[in-house]
Image (cartoon, rainbow, N blue to C red; front, top):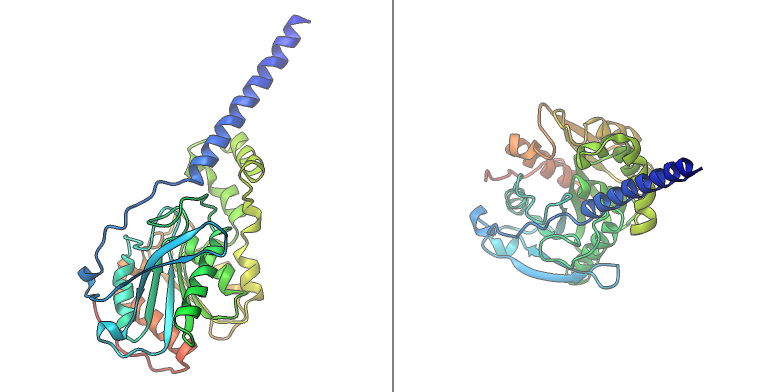
Length: 313
């Protein structure tokens, strides 16, 4: 009898230990280390930047960023604002692009740019990082800011990785958004994590995938099953440009191929960049990337087929 009690006690203890490890890992994943905003816009020829703060749609969250007007930087404005949405563990700089370089190209062809930090990133309010769930409220707050501070501006979104998925989720349903560029998005967060969680955690797939995906929604009140970009794309009646590197081992390009297949708008498109890694397409082909993005927004926001030349940065 004693050995049975000891066995049961040992199993309970082992299960408790594994659950504790799973929760600890889930906590770390939802609280990634902040990266400093330590890159100067002037390095990229951007002379005028407006530091801005605005509220998320979620109470208690204040977001920080830059509004960069084309006209104040010596370019003819075209009446459109592009909102950049950064990836997991990054901030407004998205330094491996770098985002400021792409912003400079968009300014040169007349677009105003809003770059901001999601919750728990850069200079914004500390909070749970939910990989596209609550970040939707942040992106809606950014759209609110543009709508209120620059009334009449047409709005497009450019998102990277987590920011791409968030842009699809928000842009697919928000009527104020007229077009979306999604660089390296995932198809569905739950499916993505089921396949790739061991790469993030370093833990065996069994039993930790099940433990993390079962316990974290209960303990952290953030359910990855609710982050489904594919559903937003299916409902979206607007143009989406998907960009993905064929060498992406973090979020394989099949995610964008599946998403593109669901977008029925005639102006939607998919650009697969040969051998480019995760959110590395711009770094590999900056000129073509800038020209394709500018041409897409010219067609979808300005309704013209003739893009203006993008400056090399």
